[in-house]
Image (cartoon, rainbow, N blue to C red):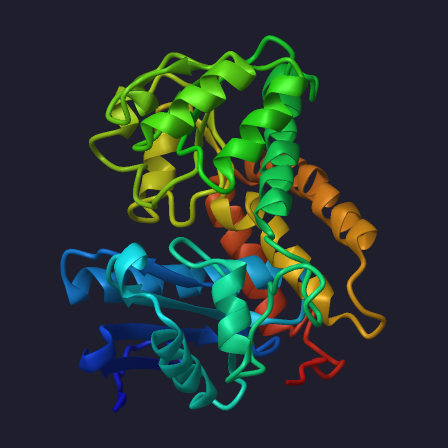
Length: 361
């Protein structure tokens, strides 16, 4: 039996904790803001050291999704879910069914998708119990498959914006880029960068993945603890959050940070620290929006349109370039400039969902 309890968190519309010890289910779902539409955000399964760490992560992730959805004007709000545990051990059909029932308890105010520790196949199993999922395997119902390549493509276009702003050209030929994490997003990002002439340095916890990327794309391998210290043009965090902090920022030897990881700043004040160190930061909730854009396209009235999704993802480059220019004019960090813009959209309800969601079991 799953027990669901609500937790009051100031600034959040709803936060719940769900437990089913017999199935190993211990989840937190946070709905940050649904002004523009129902909250949308993936479900992350991760071996958090404590439940407090899991709660902190889900709150930060949900707030980031609010900004991401607002800035991309996709008609959704911000929410996220985390489940405590080893995804390789705890997942089963019964486990995913129980979790889907928790999603149903929110009455359509939260829609989920895959994230770290979950897959499109997991989403397909959940779909048997709840309509409130997107990112199904390609060819299954509304499914468009794994959105990670779209996230990677958006990050690639964002890196081009960084190059254009710093170096006067979006060309990445000869630019040295250090990628932290070569998983579902980091690996396709490495491929895009390689074929466009970048020199790659990579780090990951998976030796086999490192060997493959090194051979395929001529990437130099460094230990995970050293990747942020590599002298390079651009550092691309594509793993867990909190990598930009009081310890790592002074050790960085890059000109910019532009990657797919969520919540790269341990705290918002670290955006100011980055600026003081002369490092340009591409806000994660702007540059990594490609996956969100893609799953939202599953819900178009006419059905999924890959070309439309790619075209909108391409616009990340222009959006970031304009953000960098405006932040420079206003003497703000790009992060603060983006947050101000997101709040403007929320206050004026710009991009609010007008078309009902096309969801059905």
